[in-house]
Length: 337
Ligand SMILES: N[C@@H](CCC(=O)N[C@@H](CS)C(=O)NCC(=O)O)C(=O)O
Image (cartoon, rainbow, N blue to C red; front, side, top):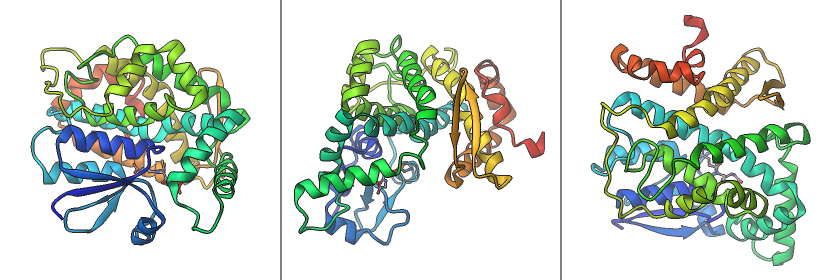
């Protein structure tokens, strides 16, 4: 086998992110849906997640952020990491926000209203392969629906948090809408890992009934941008030149990162370290309450270490943007302040 194999689901935002990456990078691959047999073949991976990438030597890997970095090491050309290290850092920040926060309103809308529940449970049940053969299709769908709905409180998809999650979705759409266009991306006329991480989440949000209606109402051009981002194999663009300032699109997204996402990560880290079983924040006048997650402590540590590895010149090139968007105070470990 000299091709990669991407094992995914069309209902998974991370699988779509990875598929768009492989297409843009022109890395030869085959796309297949996760079946019970493939679940068994990849059951040694922990945690078990969709998607899984099978390498040409037959081995498997998961976690799209790690897979994207590994593919950068293995293949040159058409990189999705901006060439200037400080811009690459901004791209990592927005990728992390898309992967770890934008999935929250996606999950909430998927399992909130009966209309979305029925749509996504049929779709997801068919492609998730979490149940063995022998069950009827209806039984599989209702089990999948019950499984996902039971996870809502753990993942913070609660009545208390609804307002902030819905507001954050709206703000992401409004941050994109004035800037999207054919061949327009966050850091230039070529896509970065941040663009496709955002695409993965927005593609699912633009398909499920309730968030699809919101997107088409308030951000119709973002809807088209998302559809095109599925296959960017023909895009031949460039990163913004050094003398151009950081794009207004990046700044509009970083404002959400600075006001919402980084304060959330910092509160999560504090709650986790203090052994609290709940973290609470209020953003834009709306509360958010949840159990802390260890994985998201790692996300903050990784972002801080990427920031720390920039030279002082690189850091000062993005200093005013990080200050103006409220990101700066969260990027330095308080133990070193
Ligand atoms: N950080 C991971 C997230 C992947 C992920 O959470 N995948 C979801 C599907 S979208 C999953 O497989 N969840 C476990 C399950 O539903 O059994 C990545 O980037 O690959």
